[in-house]
Image (cartoon, rainbow, N blue to C red; front, side):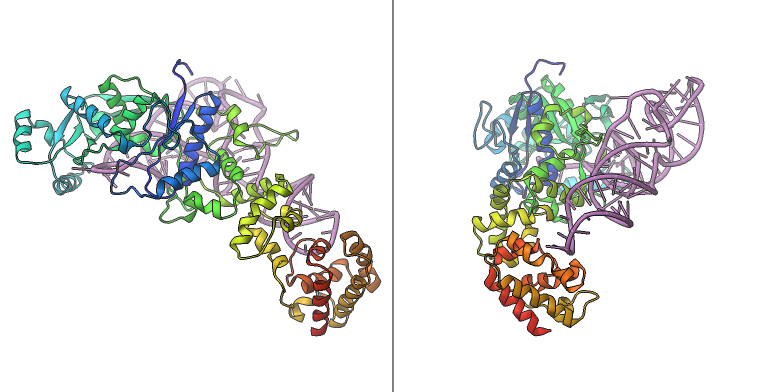
Length: 491
RNA sequence: GCCCCUAUCGUCUAGCGGUCUAGGACGCGGCCCUUUCAAGGCUGAAACCGGGGUUCGAGUCCCCGUAGGGGCACCA
């Protein structure tokens, strides 16, 4: 960085619902930037919309960020030198500075009601003008204000945009952006209820909290000139701006909580995703790790700590990126395979419990190596190995039991051979089973697959399962023999 | 309607004027391995939006189209 200010960045969500996946990525870019430059990552809550603020939302946002491992250095729960970190507790600041702007001719009072504004906006649209406000209250004199105040009319404070100028700012992701001021709105800074709007509140706080870089989503680009004008009006040092691309739904358009369940972080938490995979994936969407392995292929699996070592905000992509859940699932599978059996067992546990299965960590420890290489989501472990925890499984119909190319008689012979061999074993360990059954196919003159498939179906009740010997060892000899005998009886 | 941003395989991306007959990943096809399903290994198909410039030379720079996205609230 070309300046000496210490790096301080913030993620500033509104507590109006679930933590959005796009928000997680914005938070992550902030986190990566702070880590890369030895700075501070600050969490600030922007709850200046009293109508939309939801009570439980705050804790959900905090939990979501913690789940993702994006821990903050200062924030509402842990405090810091620049608190409070909740905007509704900082109202005096906004009011003070809003009136400062009015006193210095940079902003003005406006008394229109919501209904009047709708009329004005509609009229402008009818005339081919952008919707919005026509700045008419600029004409009001202090005498008018006094009169209207005496009538008890509430007012808002609006920014007086210098109309005949052009506003230019540098974006670290996109370069120079310039806008003619007469296309800008005289945005409301302080609402009639005394609460600030985003435009005023965020930048007063950014200034007071010594934020050095504003890393936020690109939907803020159009209103950034407003913020620049505000910085100039106050005479405050401007932060650097970094606008990162939005995440799009594969069908196009912003991914929205209303229409897409995968917009909320909770979708991934309950869906069997690993936080490591989600943060890893979010790094790959809109940014590129860029390191290659010894085969010359780009490394796809890496931690956010590794990413932080080389993170460069100027190399963030400028294009909106579609959210490819299929690739995320693949990455999740990659991450699952890196886990130890203990770790995997621990992470699978809640999913088995949620399915109503009586499992213990002990048994899951045996299950972990069986499912580790065959699943992409933790939830799949239940589908794949849930039968291990059920007292009994249904005996498949003969059509399922009998493999392609085999008759019922031969299939019965397979099951009988398996039954008798297993019954005679000194113990039921995997190597013992294998020694007894391995030659079965040859003995009967059939293919290996034809030999094992009926056994699998009879024992697990499924045509697809983890490796058979391991599964049978976990189930136990008694149940295995019972299920084999029952299958034989149906043929 | 007006303003802003963007534009490489289906998707995520590398490419920062010549080394591009455009590289990697997911997904897809084939082969191998294999008791099912996976995982793994090898391999194949697959892209520079269009048109003008600039230049000895353009995926890379500029302009115009087009397309996509975002914004235009007393929401953030």
